[in-house]
Image (tube, rainbow, N blue to C red):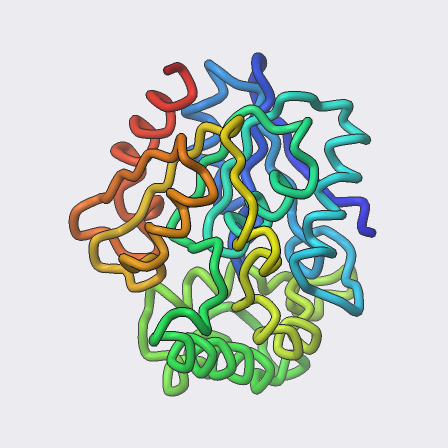
Length: 269
């Protein structure tokens, strides 16, 4: 169990936003500010990310247990959970494990099922292995600024937007030496576990009618397919599905205003 670092904005009904893999609460600050007028928004960093502890495990039972400790520490009840990718699966796992705490779920472009269920699984696994290996290849003792780190990563990760996102995790310590806030060794080890879904018995028998659920997906993303939509409706019969046209897996960053309007409408509805 990790005592998670967090930021808090606004007042009102509690909303907890859970970032995805390689992210942190900082990535959601602009959206949190736009929701702070209607909610008390909490932005925790999940374990092995941001300013939260680095620990030796990184699977969904551990992430959900961290969230339970956070909810208890903050004395939150009937919270709304919003999670993107890894954070979305953590939110679903938590809601099915601790059903008395959650009032609404907002899941952003991730399935409750295992990605072995999805033909894109090998490609996703390979991409994440390549990303982490690229970050590990940077000689942190030799670089003097972010520009140097970016140039070293460019041949391995040609997409500029991806590099800019990942480099938000590169910071200087008190001695002026760069280090990754990501626990790269452990994350690389647990990539297969992060592709897993909710427990098979939950997927087979669970039906959580008390949770209104909003799934927001990108039309250009392959993280949620037709079979995954069937799983959503089976598990969460009150689920609503919104697809953002031309959105990728990072649809909240591509279309922040549209994304925030959709979330606000669901929260207030």
